[in-house]
Amino acid sequence: RSVTIVDQLQIVTSTNSILVPEGSTSTFQVKLSGQPTADVTVNVARNSGDTDIDVQPNPTNLVFTTANWITNQTVTLFAAQDADTTDSVTTIRCSASGLANKDITATEGDNDPETGTLAVKIKPKEAKQAGARWRVDGGAWRKGGATEYPVFAGRHVISFKSVSGWVKPSSINVNVPVGSPVTRTGIYSDTKR
Image (cartoon, rainbow, N blue to C red):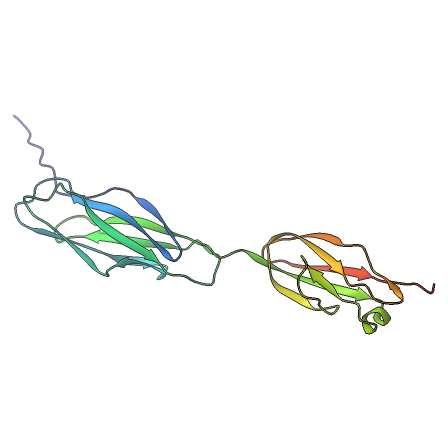
Protein backbone atom coordinates (compact mmCIF):
# COMPACT_ATOMS: atom_id res chain seq x y z
CA ARG A 1 0.00 0.00 0.00
CA SER A 2 1.26 3.53 -0.78
CA VAL A 3 0.67 6.78 1.09
CA THR A 4 0.38 10.07 -0.75
CA ILE A 5 1.38 13.16 1.21
CA VAL A 6 -0.45 16.28 0.13
CA ASP A 7 1.26 19.52 1.07
CA GLN A 8 -1.18 22.00 2.51
CA LEU A 9 -0.91 25.47 1.03
CA GLN A 10 0.72 27.90 3.48
CA ILE A 11 1.46 31.59 3.81
CA VAL A 12 5.23 32.10 3.73
CA THR A 13 6.97 35.24 5.07
CA SER A 14 10.55 36.41 4.68
CA THR A 15 10.89 36.75 8.46
CA ASN A 16 9.20 35.79 11.72
CA SER A 17 10.19 39.04 13.47
CA ILE A 18 11.06 42.55 12.36
CA LEU A 19 12.38 45.78 13.89
CA VAL A 20 10.53 48.96 12.89
CA PRO A 21 12.36 52.19 13.81
CA GLU A 22 10.13 54.70 15.60
CA GLY A 23 8.90 57.31 13.11
CA SER A 24 9.90 55.15 10.16
CA THR A 25 9.05 52.02 8.17
CA SER A 26 10.28 48.48 7.60
CA THR A 27 9.18 45.87 5.09
CA PHE A 28 8.83 42.11 4.83
CA GLN A 29 7.82 39.78 2.01
CA VAL A 30 4.87 37.41 1.65
CA LYS A 31 4.20 34.59 -0.85
CA LEU A 32 2.50 31.18 -0.92
CA SER A 33 4.17 27.81 -0.41
CA GLY A 34 2.57 26.34 -3.53
CA GLN A 35 0.35 27.04 -6.52
CA PRO A 36 -3.29 27.62 -5.55
CA THR A 37 -6.19 26.30 -7.63
CA ALA A 38 -7.86 29.75 -7.48
CA ASP A 39 -6.96 33.27 -6.37
CA VAL A 40 -5.98 33.58 -2.69
CA THR A 41 -6.28 36.92 -0.89
CA VAL A 42 -3.94 37.29 2.09
CA ASN A 43 -5.07 39.95 4.54
CA VAL A 44 -2.23 41.57 6.51
CA ALA A 45 -3.20 43.59 9.60
CA ARG A 46 -2.19 44.36 13.20
CA ASN A 47 -3.65 41.60 15.37
CA SER A 48 -2.58 42.58 18.88
CA GLY A 49 -0.08 44.61 20.87
CA ASP A 50 1.04 48.22 20.66
CA THR A 51 -1.07 50.37 18.34
CA ASP A 52 1.97 52.53 17.44
CA ILE A 53 2.99 49.86 14.91
CA ASP A 54 0.66 49.18 12.01
CA VAL A 55 0.46 48.03 8.40
CA GLN A 56 0.41 50.67 5.65
CA PRO A 57 -2.16 50.80 4.21
CA ASN A 58 -4.27 49.05 6.81
CA PRO A 59 -5.49 46.49 6.06
CA THR A 60 -3.27 45.35 3.24
CA ASN A 61 -4.74 42.73 0.90
CA LEU A 62 -2.31 40.70 -1.23
CA VAL A 63 -3.83 38.74 -4.10
CA PHE A 64 -1.98 35.59 -5.19
CA THR A 65 -2.97 33.87 -8.43
CA THR A 66 -1.99 30.64 -10.14
CA ALA A 67 0.64 32.72 -11.96
CA ASN A 68 2.16 34.92 -9.19
CA TRP A 69 1.92 32.69 -6.09
CA ILE A 70 5.72 32.28 -5.89
CA THR A 71 6.48 36.00 -6.31
CA ASN A 72 7.12 37.90 -3.08
CA GLN A 73 4.76 40.78 -2.35
CA THR A 74 5.95 43.56 -0.03
CA VAL A 75 4.25 44.56 3.22
CA THR A 76 5.16 47.91 4.80
CA LEU A 77 4.98 48.49 8.55
CA PHE A 78 5.10 51.95 10.15
CA ALA A 79 5.96 52.81 13.77
CA ALA A 80 4.51 56.15 14.93
CA GLN A 81 6.50 58.58 17.07
CA ASP A 82 5.59 58.35 20.74
CA ALA A 83 6.83 59.91 23.98
CA ASP A 84 7.85 56.73 25.79
CA THR A 85 11.25 55.03 25.78
CA THR A 86 9.83 51.53 25.40
CA ASP A 87 10.53 49.17 22.51
CA SER A 88 6.87 48.17 22.11
CA VAL A 89 5.80 44.92 20.45
CA THR A 90 2.94 44.18 18.05
CA THR A 91 1.71 41.02 16.33
CA ILE A 92 1.05 41.41 12.60
CA ARG A 93 -1.18 38.64 11.23
CA CYS A 94 -1.22 37.33 7.66
CA SER A 95 -4.48 35.42 7.11
CA ALA A 96 -6.43 33.89 4.23
CA SER A 97 -9.59 31.83 4.07
CA GLY A 98 -8.78 28.13 4.48
CA LEU A 99 -5.08 28.69 5.35
CA ALA A 100 -3.28 28.73 8.69
CA ASN A 101 -2.49 32.22 9.99
CA LYS A 102 1.12 33.41 9.86
CA ASP A 103 2.11 35.87 12.60
CA ILE A 104 5.05 38.28 12.53
CA THR A 105 6.39 39.89 15.70
CA ALA A 106 7.11 43.59 15.06
CA THR A 107 9.21 45.48 17.62
CA GLU A 108 9.35 49.27 17.67
CA GLY A 109 12.95 50.52 17.79
CA ASP A 110 12.43 53.47 20.11
CA ASN A 111 14.40 56.64 19.43
CA ASP A 112 13.47 58.65 22.53
CA PRO A 113 16.43 59.36 24.78
CA GLU A 114 16.36 57.86 28.22
CA THR A 115 16.19 60.45 30.97
CA GLY A 116 16.51 60.95 34.70
CA THR A 117 16.18 63.87 37.10
CA LEU A 118 18.79 65.96 38.85
CA ALA A 119 18.35 68.32 41.81
CA VAL A 120 21.07 70.40 43.46
CA LYS A 121 20.86 71.96 46.91
CA ILE A 122 22.96 75.01 47.74
CA LYS A 123 24.16 75.68 51.30
CA PRO A 124 24.26 77.80 53.36
CA LYS A 125 21.05 79.75 52.83
CA GLU A 126 23.01 83.01 53.03
CA ALA A 127 24.94 82.00 49.88
CA LYS A 128 21.62 81.29 48.13
CA GLN A 129 20.35 84.69 49.20
CA ALA A 130 23.53 86.30 47.84
CA GLY A 131 22.84 84.79 44.38
CA ALA A 132 24.53 81.38 44.44
CA ARG A 133 23.38 79.25 41.49
CA TRP A 134 24.15 75.94 39.78
CA ARG A 135 23.94 74.60 36.23
CA VAL A 136 24.37 71.39 34.29
CA ASP A 137 26.83 71.09 31.41
CA GLY A 138 27.06 74.87 30.95
CA GLY A 139 23.28 75.36 30.70
CA ALA A 140 21.08 77.96 32.38
CA TRP A 141 21.77 78.98 35.97
CA ARG A 142 19.30 77.58 38.50
CA LYS A 143 18.49 78.32 42.10
CA GLY A 144 19.38 75.78 44.77
CA GLY A 145 16.73 73.11 45.17
CA ALA A 146 15.58 73.45 41.55
CA THR A 147 15.06 70.20 39.70
CA GLU A 148 16.42 69.79 36.18
CA TYR A 149 14.12 67.47 34.24
CA PRO A 150 14.59 65.79 31.90
CA VAL A 151 18.32 65.23 31.95
CA PHE A 152 19.64 62.66 29.52
CA ALA A 153 20.84 59.59 31.36
CA GLY A 154 24.63 59.52 31.61
CA ARG A 155 27.51 61.67 32.83
CA HIS A 156 27.09 65.38 33.51
CA VAL A 157 29.03 68.20 35.19
CA ILE A 158 27.40 70.44 37.78
CA SER A 159 29.12 73.81 38.10
CA PHE A 160 28.52 76.67 40.51
CA LYS A 161 28.32 80.43 39.97
CA SER A 162 30.85 82.79 41.55
CA VAL A 163 29.26 85.05 44.17
CA SER A 164 30.95 88.04 45.82
CA GLY A 165 31.97 87.22 49.41
CA TRP A 166 31.75 83.46 48.86
CA VAL A 167 34.07 80.70 47.63
CA LYS A 168 32.15 78.55 45.21
CA PRO A 169 32.25 74.75 45.47
CA SER A 170 34.26 72.69 42.99
CA SER A 171 32.38 71.29 40.01
CA ILE A 172 30.73 67.93 40.62
CA ASN A 173 30.78 65.04 38.13
CA VAL A 174 27.54 63.07 38.33
CA ASN A 175 26.11 60.01 36.60
CA VAL A 176 22.33 60.25 36.15
CA PRO A 177 20.64 56.84 35.79
CA VAL A 178 17.44 56.29 33.81
CA GLY A 179 14.32 57.15 35.80
CA SER A 180 16.05 57.66 39.14
CA PRO A 181 16.35 61.05 40.84
CA VAL A 182 19.84 62.24 41.76
CA THR A 183 20.44 64.95 44.38
CA ARG A 184 23.77 66.67 45.06
CA THR A 185 24.74 69.52 47.41
CA GLY A 186 27.06 72.45 46.73
CA ILE A 187 28.44 74.11 49.85
CA TYR A 188 29.72 77.68 49.51
CA SER A 189 32.34 78.98 52.01
CA ASP A 190 32.14 82.49 53.46
CA THR A 191 35.36 84.38 52.63
CA LYS A 192 35.12 86.23 55.98
CA ARG A 193 35.70 83.09 58.01
